[in-house]
Image 1 (spheres, rainbow, N blue to C red):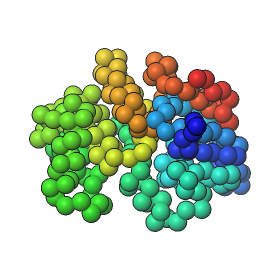
Image 2: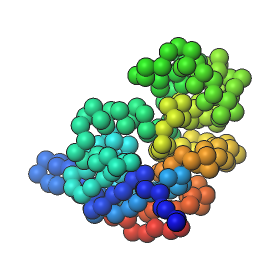
Image 3: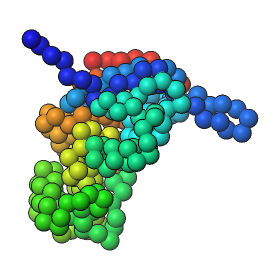
Image 4: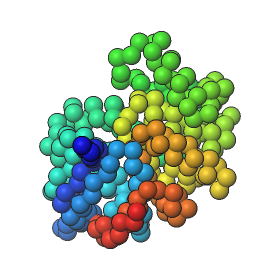
Length: 230
C-alpha cells in the first residue's frame, strides 16, 4: 500500500493583519498551501506583496492573525512561546542575503554559535561544526575570519551555521542576492544537494534563475497566492 508523507507545512486560510495608526494592513489573505518533505519551493512577487511576512510565519518568528499554520503537526498560531523557541532552535534553519556572520569570529566559531542553546558537550559540538563545514566544502576554512573569505564562501558558512542544528526546514531570504552569477550557481547547487538529502527548502527570491531550479514556485501579490507553478 502506498502512503503519502505528511506535509512539513500545512497552511489553511492563513491571514496576517497589522494595525498602523487608524488603518488595518492586510499583509496576507487566505493562504492555502501544503509543502512536502524534501520539497524545494520558491516564493516570488512584488515588493510589499507579503513574501517576508510569509517567511516570518513559516519561521515561527511571528504568528498568523487567522487560519491554521502547522509545522510537523504543531499549530504555530497557538503554540507557546517556549515551543516556538524550540522549533526555531531545533527544526528550522535560516539563511539571509547579508550572511550575518560575526566578523571577529572564525568560520567555525560562527557555525558553533548556532549550537549555543543546545545541551551538546564540547566534543559533540566540535564534531557537528566540522561536519557542517565539510558538508558545504569548507573543511579547510574553519579557522578563517569572514573577511578572509569570498562572498560565496561566507554564504557557505552561513548555510553551515543553519544546517549544523540538523533542521527539517531551511528558510532562505534572497540567499544569492549579494553574489555574482558564478557564486550564485555554486550556492544553488549546494542548496539543491541539501534538498536531495531530505531537507525541505523554501527560498524567497527576485531572481528568476533561482526560481526556475525549484520543484514548485509560489507567486504572492497583495497578500494572495496568485500562481503556483510546478
